[in-house]
Length: 173
Image (cartoon, rainbow, N blue to C red; front, top):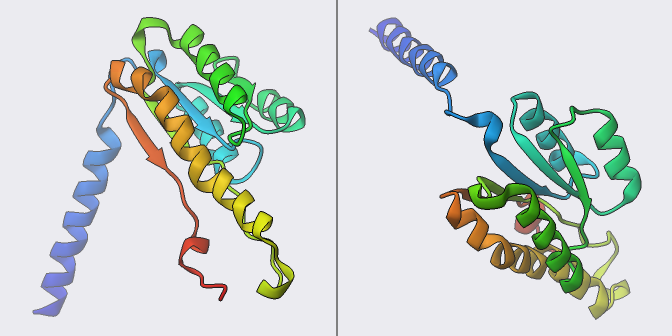
């Protein structure tokens, strides 16, 4: 009996996988996605993957070195911009830049990926500023970027994806 159950479950899994791989999004090459935190890690990898799939990626990097490295490794569909999510002026400048690039089509996707970790040290060694900096980047920056770009996302009936790490589940106290 168990071999049949396992065989049926495996067949269903493979059928679902085959079906998902055959699905396509129409007009993918005309859709724009903004990703924050593209200097390294997941944001960098996601920008490369989406560029390889034909999307128009707007990659927001914190440093010029990160932007240059990413641009060199991708096609000319990917555009980079410098963004500090803790600076309201930087967010406003990037919002205007994105508006120029997407025009009336709007923003099909916004991936809030920029984030930092708490310095690894005993709590007695950390200051209030250490915690405030983490909240500024990981929470308040995400909120401000989302609020400023939401009209463009709505215009395209797009999606917002917020990336978090396992560090949100770790207690330091």
